[in-house]
View 1 (tube, one colour):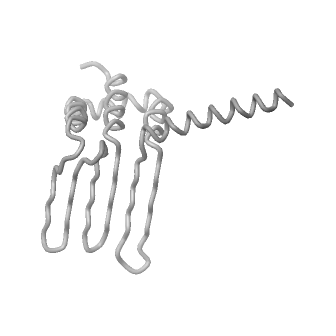
View 2 (cartoon, helix red, strand yellow):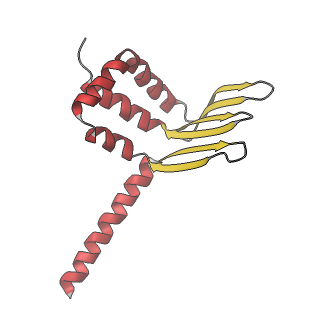
Length: 145
């Protein structure tokens, strides 16, 4: 009985630490709402830790191919991620016209992209650290020039 209690305590502590780690990394949120009859409404929350872990599960040849295509943009992606960390609360883009509105900002270490039109509303939020992790992983496997 004592062994069972110790095992349950160990399992509970492991799950608590895993939960803290997942919450620390943040959540990616994607919301798409189509403003028409029969339109789709998709709301997706994914722990941000899934992205770097998922990049390690992608077959290496496929990841190298993607990295080769993205290679010219990786230095820019790395610098943007580094600079976004320096400005945890900033408005980057705010464009409006008669029917459309695009707003890109950084709040509390997350990049928010909001696009509102007559047809669709799209809202995406991604932790800045996740962008940096993706750039690091792609640079690690990118073929040398």
